[in-house]
Amino acid sequence: MIPTLIEILDTSIANVALGHIQGSLSAGQDEVTWVLTSYLVSNAVVIPISGWLSRLMGRRDFLLASIALFTLSSMLCGMATSLEALILFRVVQGVGGGGLQPMSQAILLETFPPNQRGMAMAIFAMGAVMGPILGPLLGGYITDNYSWRWIFYINVPIGLLAWFMNWLYIQDPPYLERRGENEGIDVVGLGMLSVGLASLQIVLDKGQQDDWFAADHILILSILAGVCLVGFIFWELRQKNPIVDLRVFRDRSFATGNVVMFCGFFAFFGSIVLLPMYLQTLMGYTAFLAGVVLGPGGLIMLLFLPLVGKLTQRVDARFLLFIGLLISAGSLWYMSGFTLGIDLGTAIFARNIQAVGIAFFFVPLSFLTMAFIPREKMNNASAIFNLLRNLGGSFGVAFVTTLLARRTQFHQHRLVENLSPLDSAYSISLERIKQAVALRLGEFADTTTYAAGVIHRYLQREAAAMAFYDVFYAQAMMFLALCALMWIMRRPPKGGGMPQGGH
Image (cartoon, rainbow, N blue to C red; front, side, top):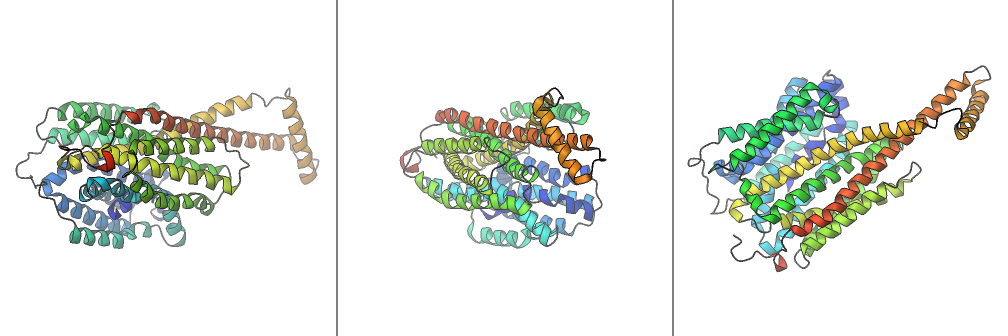
């Protein structure tokens, strides 16, 4: 779980430090965002091929090499003296981090007996779910009180601990043989996957900023991603030793679980971005107060994850997942009813309800998705599952930022229709503000222009708030729709056990 936690932390911990990095390294606004994008791109490429790399090198050796590379590159990121060097080391860090999530999950699933796999997924979820929550909070605290370099240096002692623990306790099971000498390298498949995922990640990360398909480079990268990834699917299905074995999707529980995970993290990760943004930009919360809202939810998740893991041994995991989806939908629906006058307790309550829902979502879903996967295919299946989870988060962030901008424009256009001298409410408000301005600045001040500006700022704030509520509502409906889809998954064996022949 430790390698998973530090890897996911690094997908978001640098977000809040970009301004400090920009000033320290004399970089432009567009240039410094590559500190985030470079990591996500290399990470996305390595995750799906981690199963193949574990066969090539041996899973234990691959995991240890990944931890070592991630730890070393983290130290080099902190020591970087130029933006170019930092971006290069972030690429290497993403390569090292790509195998940490899927290998950790595969090892946990195989180490625990089948009737305890729900608990294993609860342990894994502590890293996978807590990472996106702790990242911005930890990054902000370190940056404000120390230096942005320490957001990378902090990985070094944790990485060394993770390497030593895995070296001491992890061994490859007998059925996982190192087959590097017997397997050729599927160069065509590797090339199409790398180019396709790299292009897709850049599109998702830069699309809203560059106005999507209005920008030629976004359009070209989108076409390239589509062609490469579609071509990759057809190519891999015809290979004897594919880089990524897509035949695992023949299991309907695995296929459905991946769809639910993609859509669930699509909505969940988007809301993790939205709520702090809403509190800080519209409610005037400081970064610390936004952290106060998010922090208790993390503690609640830590309490509920082991409980849900234990429940998978006694209750149909599909029912637990159904509860998680309903609670998640309810929390987002509650957020869609916010107003600009809510107090701190209301925001904390909504976030805490969401935390309970995510605990009931992630653990049963991971257990159900992997319930019928043979042990020897667990590395490959785990790699695909983690890739789609990460892509769901990337798509979710791109979706919410785009929808937020579009809905803000829509509501602003509709509200402006009422800003007319013929509208009595507008005229009354304008006169009141003009009188207040005159009392404060004197009769000779341009009270009309000042009052109109005040009303316009209020209008922009209200339009933005209405857009936030629309996006929260859309995410709630997505969780609600998944309630029907999840019943396609097969009923897990009683007590969490694997049926005969399951291996």
